[in-house]
Image (cartoon, rainbow, N blue to C red; front, top):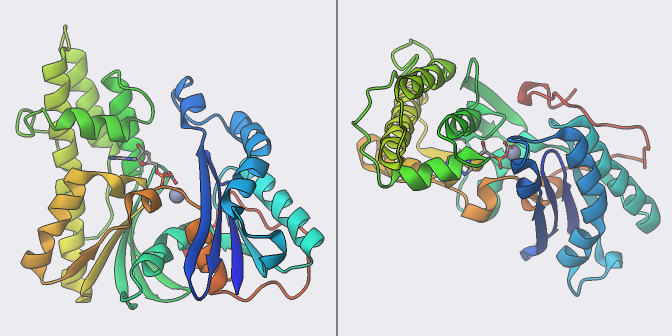
Amino acid sequence: MITLGIETSCDETAIALYDSDKGIIGESIYSQMKMHAEYGGVVPELASRDHCLKIIDVLKDAMGDHSLESIDQIAYTSGPGLLGALLIGESFAQGLSSALEVPLIPINHLEGHLMSPIMEFPEISMPFICLLVSGGHSMIVDVKAKGEYEILGQSQDDAVGEAFDKVGKLLGLPYPGGPHIEKIAMKGNSSAYDFPRPMIHSGNLDMSLSGLKTAVLYTVQKIDDLDDDMKADIAASFQKAVTDVLIAKIKKTIDQTNRTKVIIAGGVAANKYIREEFRNLESILNVKVYYPDLKYCGDNAAMIAFVGSMMSPLKEHNIKSKVRARWPLNELTK
Ligand code: KG4
Ligand code: ZN
């Protein structure tokens, strides 16, 4: 069975083709990052317009030599995300589904991130713990079974990626700051600044990052001539503080749940320093740690097509919109 996946929840226009026997057989992704960088963040109106402009080329690229007639069903991200951007993906999915007379499956974007490691590592069986860290979400989820997700802890304010991006801005780095912070941090001293590790000793699995970001702001404000060496030291110290919090929370999670597998997903999972620090947990906690391939850390359609292949399509073609800006994992059935 072949499932076409469509992802347009934020600033990536992505389409992928998943074959239940062979895995991903075609995929294409267009990132709008450069366009939004000019504004220092994603501009929703521009995102919707650009999805419109690029989606047909992305489809052609993803299809390669495969014919549209080979598609058995269409899965698309219906939330959470930017409403206008989601609507472009949904309208496109509806048009294709009517033309090809194939069923439609609305997919929760977060479920895509949670399930994608299974697509890449078929040996992973549930249950497992997933640390989902992206620009919009930071949560620790107990993935018990398909569709059964318990959020054990989450950020009370900024998402981890958001904190990276805000600190990037403070250091004068281009948007999004995450990858740039990682790059300059390689030359920095991570002990140069003793930034706070908010909520590291709180009794629960929740996190908070806005205090850390504010500490970086105060540090930067006190420096008259912020040179590249200082920026590198601040980036390295900030990255270490964030990582220390994430590691402490995952240690606590394993302690509480006795799970033996930990998966890191979402855009921040591309960070090599964080990946290495988590790798060390394997021997300390006797767990196995998995990360997605770099191309599947951020938003992509392969994960949407894959989750679609595990779901039952809507019973009948339904043109009523299913998009939702907000769609928490614990409301999947609603
Ligand atoms: O999952 P994603 O592509 O989009 C959503 O937010 O859903 O994540 C993007 C976030 C951005 O905040 C970006 O700065 C962050 O992931 N990110 C990183 C790295 N690469 C991307 N943060 C830290 N280190 C990186 N290497
Ligand atoms: Zn995402």
